[in-house]
Image (cartoon, rainbow, N blue to C red; front, side, top):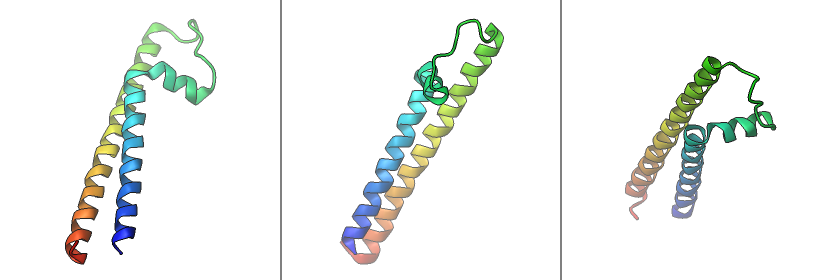
Length: 90
């Protein structure tokens, strides 16, 4: 039972770290993230300056949402291990 609890905690922690990494990728490296999404670089003259700034702002908010999901997942993982640890008396 303890092994399953620790495996569950480890998987939740890894998922949380991946969410946080994805959020940082979207916030700091929005062009890289968009290139990963559309699988090719964005041409310079494709969008106007205002639309590009709006796109950058949207990517930053998406990154913040991913960071929030990662932080909530870490809190849930810690809660799971603490409640499970109290129930099976480590």
